[in-house]
Image (tube, rainbow, N blue to C red; front, side, top):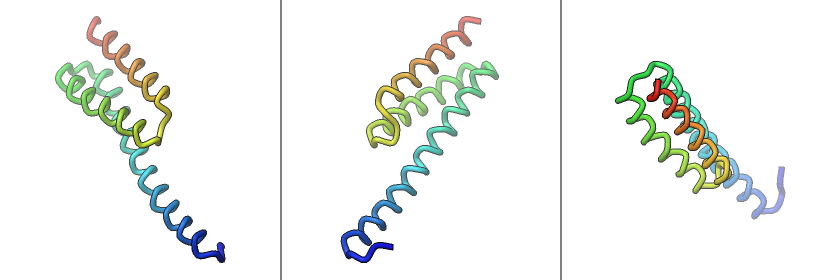
Length: 89
């Protein structure tokens, strides 16, 4: 445990940030999973609504620095490709 006052404060800040980041990351993963489920089910309206929400969450998560911007772009690209494949068939 830290002895210095600033180190104690830094630990408190890190704990709060870690908690927020874990929540945001979990929310993102849930949204991506729901989009995959909608794609497999083939329901166009649900896919479109979930895609808008997921895309926004991915961008927001990248902006907060929880995921890397390139990882966000890659994830959105792959999801968009999956949606295209699902709508084509």
